[in-house]
Each structure stands twice: as structure tokens, then as C-alpha cells.
Amino acid sequence: MPRFAPLRIVALPLLFLAIQVAAQDNKDGGSTNAKDENVIRIGVAVPQNQSRRPVALEWEHTQLVRLLKDLSIKKGDPRKFEVIPLQSTSQNDAFRECSDKKCDFVVLTTFVDSSLDSPVAVNPGGVRINPPPLGLPLSRCCANLMFKIMAPGRSRPVADGLIAAPEGLTDEDAPEQVIRLAASQIAKEVRKKRPPLRE
Image (cartoon, rainbow, N blue to C red; front, side):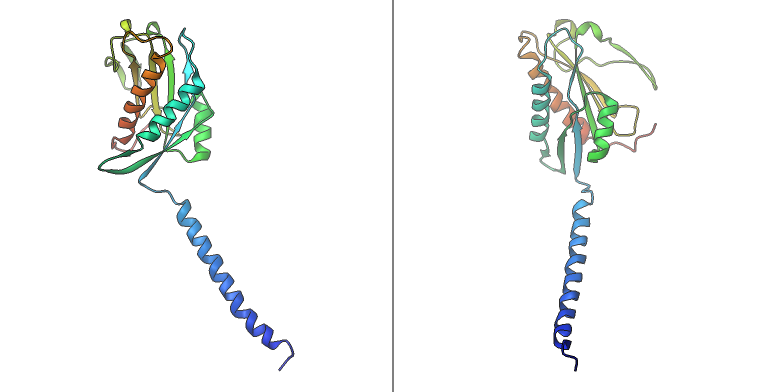
């Protein structure tokens, strides 16, 4: 027998073992990267401010992300949220960022003044009357927040709305209150089961 035959005999089983371990690692990695149907990935863009009031946008962004994380689990619903803070503010930039992060939805928010909003909206489906905002009538509000929930690759919102803060809050407190109300409404909209979206 050749001099190095025993070494060759020992090395072959080790080689087979290494191949099996590598195959198992690849299998595990594939299952880890596979999408969990019970996880809803939500990308949250940095809010915009079109109001005349100063708003700490980074702070409100952090608050919205935190509140949505707090609402990520609902009793009786196997689905949960994975909330992903985005650096983008515009819709196009948010879509690009969410594409890399495999988000199911993109949340866009904008602080606005009452005078910028109309009770009538025109969209591809025709003219509709906007429902009153969650809170007090716009004319009596000290802060308003528009939100849109978008699905990447779709031009129409999955859901949108206008949130109004209760009357009597200071300019410092009002944005935080509408963010809380918006987080609750966004969570409800995301959990709704809808038919496949069509353009």
C-alpha cells in the first residue's frame, strides 16, 4: 500500500462531512432569508412639514417608528409588524430605499395647516368627499397630519387619511398627539385584508 494511503482514507470522510455541513448551512440560510408570510415589513419615511408651525421632524419620525413597533403584535392576529425607519422623505426616494429593504408598505406623513386641506378630493376613481379627520373639525385644530400608506410599485395609496389633534394643545404638544393618533390608524389600515391591488 502507498505510504500516504492511511491519510487519504481518513481525509475522505472528513471531506464528505465538510460538504454535508456546507449544504446544511446553505439550506438554513435559504430558510432564514425566505419571507415569513406573518411578518409585515413597514418602511416609515421621515415626515415632511408643510405647515407654518415648527416641527421636530426627526423626533416625530422616531416617535412614529416606536409607536408602530408597540402596535406590532395584536391579540388574535398571527401577523406582526417589522417596522423599518427610512432616511427618505419623498415618495420616490422612499420607494427606492424600501426596494432594497424588502418592505411591503411605505408610510408617508406630512404636517399641514388647515387651510391647505379641502373636504373634496379628486383621484383616479373620481370625486369624493373626504371624511372628517380623526379629532376635532379642521377649523378648530392646532395641527393636522396627512398620511399615505403606499405599496412599492403602485401609484395609488393603499390607504390615506387626515389626522387632527384635539383643540387646546400647544404647538409643542400637538404634533406628538397627531403622531400617536396616526400610528393607531396606520396600524389598523395595514392589518386590513384587501384584495390584490390593481393599477
